[in-house]
Amino acid sequence: MRMHTNRPHGLGCVTWNVHRGRGKDDRVDPKRIVDVLASEVCAHRPEVLALQEADEETPPHAGLLDLERIEAETGLRSIHSDATLRWGPQSHGFLGAVLFLHPDFEITAAHVLDLPGHCHRGAVVVETLKNGRALRILTTHLSLGQMLRAAQMRTIGQFLFRRPKMQTLLLGDLNEWRPWSGLAFSQKLVGQRLTGPVRRTFPAPRPLLPLDRILSDQPGAVCEARVLDGPGIRMASDHRPLAARVLLA
Image (cartoon, rainbow, N blue to C red; front, side, top):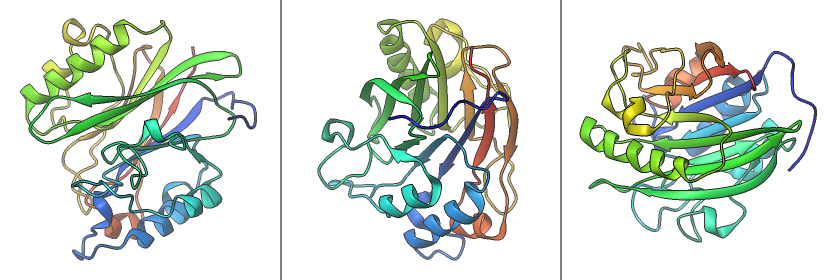
């Protein structure tokens, strides 16, 4: 996948838990999610877009969103065209995690990881080249319980230990409500220190908890982090999207 050159002020990234299309009015409306993505969330043309809860919760984990329209409206491309990067033939992603990248990225490797827990969780990992710079992008939706989050991040850390060294970006609904993070993100457990600004994203009408994060193993790489807002955003999901710029090492 390839497209235009990298912006000198960093890589635009967005993560959003779309709550399986269930909005503030308790109505399930996947079309509304795509409308809001096009009009509010991706108005500034991010180059990385990670969605969580974008497939059905139970098997066969069927996709909910109009991927073709998302790609047409945003200029991004789903990385899940290969069946091995989806949970099943009806899925759009892996256990609700769907990753879109600007076509300028060259994907050199891609994986999905099953994570431990009584609720099935997973992670999507792609290793890329961007203007000759190696970047690993990982998106996931971690469990609510701290011990499960720790086990899941340990699994991710063990996977990363076996992979080539490169700048790593983690984004998604990490379900960590404490601003100082916790055991799940400790360097001793994960094997590397992941840091980024803390912004409150949940609940959407009046955010109190910083559940959604954009983190990097490069200190200070994640900058200009902001919680997106708009009338559609407040109505479409129970989370607000988090956007940030990521400086490439």
